[in-house]
Length: 81
Image (cartoon, rainbow, N blue to C red; front, side):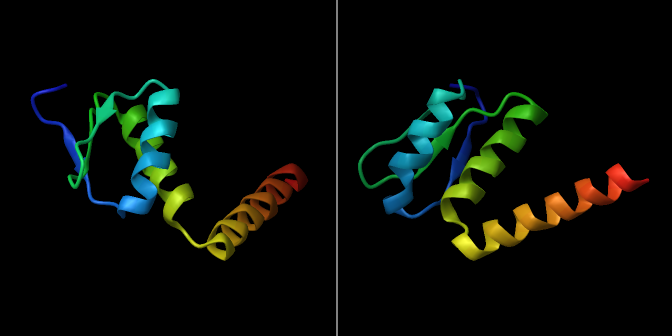
C-alpha cells in the first residue's frame, strides 16, 4: 500500500462489491472486519475509477438512469452539430 492510502467510508453492505470491482480493474485495496475500505490511489485515472465504482454501487438506480439519459442526450446534440 502507498504511504497515503485513501480510506473510503461506505456502508458495510457495499464494501465487498466495491472491493471486488476495484481489485478486478487493478486498483489495490484491502479491509479488515468492521473497518473501512482502504484504497491505493496513485493517479488521477485511478481516482476517477474509484469515484465511478463507488457512485455506481451507492447511487439510487433512478439517479443512474437519469445520468445515463443525460449522456445520451448530450451525445445526440454533439452528433447534430
